[in-house]
Length: 474
Image 1 (cartoon, rainbow, N blue to C red):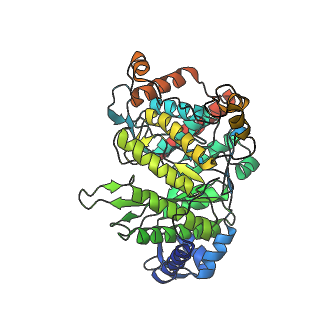
Image 2 (image 1 turned 60 degrees about the vertical axis):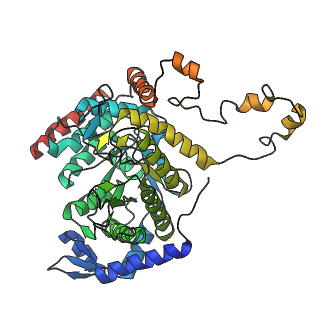
Image 3 (image 1 turned 135 degrees about the vertical axis):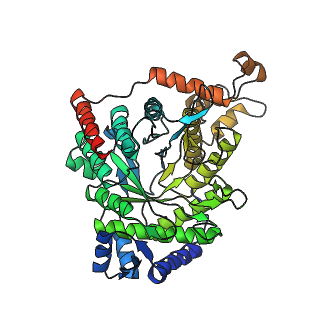
């Protein structure tokens, strides 16, 4: 497995040291009484009037040592279980929570609907490079329970592991209740079918809801992808070094809170650094600097904490699945994967994480395959070096039908479903289709032919009952 470092070992130690100093001297605002009690009992200094907490070095290091270095994402079927760590390649999944949708038929933006969410899940369930599933969030469901509806749709329509962005502890309790419909308590603890996302508020703030999700999920063995979203020039220092130092401090805080609440609880760091555009006041997430910051944070988290790290690899600032989108997401995913991350997030989404596109999801499946091919490197041995075949062919010979060609021509090189290598005449004879049109055809083909494995009628009815129960939250 090929790896590349985008930060020196000395820089890693320096940033880790500075982040710990920030936590001990500047502190973090923690707006949860329960979290404050845990921190107080562990020796942290707390100002109750401001909710400011200052950590000791021992609290940080002890928490790092308790956090597991490997996390299992369980599938409804065990063959779809995924291990997140650093011993193998990366897991890939779409982000959850997008409310916008790019209609493939009209090419117009609109709010996502339940039917779009079902199509999205069906597509992600089929695509081989998408390891786990999330969903866009439909607008034709009450805002307060969209996360619960999405959980129901995911559990019904995919056999892969699912990710959900819960809206708070009450919603998470019902999401866990749904998961227990599919898995026993032991299975949920050992290979949980669901994981969740929680987030900090940069700079250096943790609200009550985030801690409640973090602690409640950890109690049941449910992994949490803990996101930190510093924006360079706005909610973090303008420099890349300053932004990743702040992000690392916030991720260290998440590790401490997670492990104080539930020692050994599975946690995945999920840094999402962005840039504040001083000209437009917009967020920038797809540039080379974003890729560099996430790659650097991957090394810092790996070396200093040894916990799994998810990054926003398939990301773009573009509003369409166009050339800009393909360049930005390809560049970001390659740098991210080379840095040795555990998960690459972002498949299928454009306009940062706000909008979903089925066509982009299909193309991202190809981009992920290419990235994994690069990571696997080139196999060099007596058989693959081809010396015998070169000797047999000699000067001016060919290799069309030799044994090595027959054995490897189907597997040595990728054959993408939506990319062209045709001559111009052949391409014209097939309708002069561009990448979007070919991706659209691929989407329709999959949706017309693939039927996800269904749950038993009893389990589906139980999920429907829990969803009805959730309406009391509206």
